[in-house]
Image (cartoon, rainbow, N blue to C red; front, side):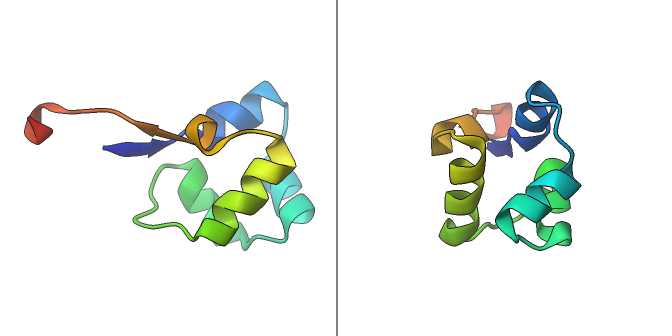
Length: 71
């Protein structure tokens, strides 16, 4: 399962979703879905903008973990 780490990344930087919206121009609802780990899909352009704004790699933003149903 792929999970978003955006909430943790923003908390570490003492940022809010609104701050990231202003910095990236990404739609607020898109970022809130990612923040709350409710996204079913995400565009490469969105990932790119977030990674640039937060100065992170894709692996910092998206984390893959196996759950019991995957085995």
